[in-house]
Image (cartoon, rainbow, N blue to C red; front, side):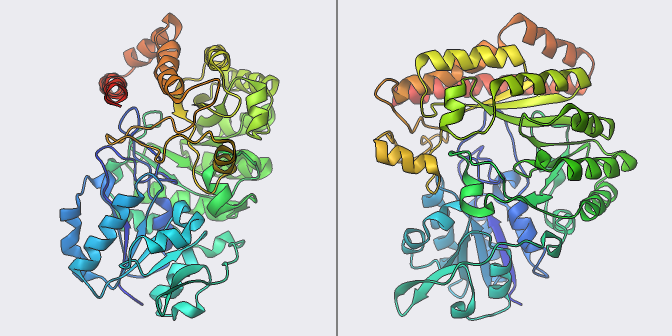
Length: 475
């Protein structure tokens, strides 16, 4: 077995390198997700090493001395950081010419040939779901015999057959031992989760067909493949024992609540352990299921609303209705389940009027906290194809030089500049109103730790708004 390094490469300051899709920009406040995809494959390879450079604050100079210690390096790369990611790969190869280098992630899965062609120092690209692909390479199997890779043979780029998706998810080992061996729990922080927190996947894929969503269209697929409830509960029990400082566990599955009976079974197991937990959810979970989850430790749901306009939800194939969303939110409020709601401005069908409608809708349903993003047309998604065909794609990248997100789409009736400016307007309209200020103030009065968190986040948030404005003026 090759001695293998799994690396989330260093990038610009504040980049959330741990997010499942290497989130396309610096966030409003400091946030870092666990590098679960790399940890999962690292768990398959004995004596491997996982380095999460962004979360640890490591630079390339910090990492290069380690290059000589390994025979194989696997870098998790993304569309917005691809150029710098390749530069990291090249620097590692120069530091250790014998080092084999592979790239993984949604961007290279979608564009394997140009990704490999970007540098002769990259030896292969692992497409789509890459766990057992990397394991076979680390075992020394010849490239010609490994499904799911793109590589060079006699100077020519070769695409091996696709690898089948993993359907027996229980065949994957636990990530908890890798977290314990290689990561520092206190590096990971999300504003709406208790600190410190820990995230994991209990399954992959998503049944929904949202046109903008990267992972189901490039890696996970549109089938929700899950680990058994017993295995999930077993790993959470191990995490609880191994990491007593963790205050909350988060299921990062695209939609953990898609399978109601399974979610309820897992919840009951976590309830017996006394675990506080949260998860992603679509706003369509019935009251009866929500009640079971809440009674067994559920604290918060991360819900992708995207828009408050039904036509836009239909345009992006969201598969939700506004009346159902309102009922779902009323149920959550009744049960005392907190919600972190995510919205996107600039999706197909967006106008100045629909932006105002979505802002009004967000204030109406009133999730505890929100995240607002600019529509990001990732290569490999239906949104990217649609934007390219219709001439909506204005920007060649998804971020500015300072790491903040660009409004990459522009419509005849709505410019990218207007979309860009609407993000700050959305945040201000939602948070700078008496009701929300009172909620946050009351929350702070109940806890000194929460007071310190909210004050720090406030400083970071205002810096974010100011930096966006400065970047826009410079552009």
